[in-house]
Length: 336
Ligand code: NDP
Image (cartoon, rainbow, N blue to C red; front, side, top):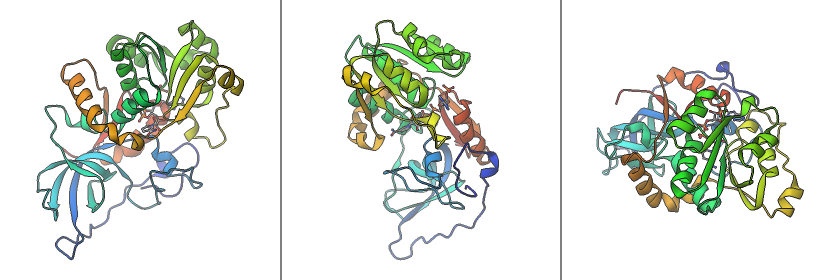
């Protein structure tokens, strides 16, 4: 849990592990519940926006209340169930929590999981929310055409590394940026990006992008906002598309907001569109079968970064804002 709202950069002291006795009501009235032992839980940057005192508009999730369990996507195993479709021992995927157990109430997303031969963590990120975000954002919002140039920020992260791989498989020219040499090497040597750079080593982002895209950028998939968004807009081609997936560089600083040059947007007829993964649930079937096939045939990779133990959740979460994670950040709470 969080001890109080968090408005700046999150600190370890903002979090505490609380123990409470679960009050189960199996078989009582119609309060149908499933008790799940959490195995792998997702660590996501947007949770910070739910922890703020003055809530940004989060149309899809409620504020996190200090002292209360924090819900998150994850994979677990059913311990006890009042619902006939879930049996003790079933593997499940859905909305769990940063805790050892979750009481999943009626109406909460929970599905039985068939791992289909892939490691369970793949079902938390690549085949879960991050994957659908990358797929929906790239294909529906960016509307790519073969041969176009694509720029992805936070490219070695969970969403970014998938966007880059979808774009390459689709036939685009893809450049990613990330915050370390190790991440840049991963992008170029293992994930098939055409090029990549460490944005922390660039003093002028606008001219860096000019170097990597001498012919301009057709598509910018933005995970970070801030100065990178401004620099990308300055380098966009006419009729370029910018997908605002996330603006992580602005999450930790309520005063920081990107100000792209609107004359560029106007005179180059650039489309800048924000989107939420929940708007692309309809693509889930396509997304899942395509991505599953790419993973099984080795055409796509799913870098995953796992920490162990419930007590590592706060540092794993804070690490997202420091760039500690390579690929999808997950905490393993219990043995499979
Ligand atoms: P990542 O796995 O990409 O982890 C976050 C990464 O962001 C870090 O590793 C770090 O990489 C980078 N980063 C952190 N701080 C900064 C900063 N100040 N400036 C630039 N980069 C920074 O996270 P996700 O893939 O889960 O999420 C990526 C983005 O997508 C987030 O903004 C998230 O909120 C958003 N999102 C949006 C969804 C939607 O429905 N629209 C759904 C899911 C995620 P580096 O080393 O490169 O700095």
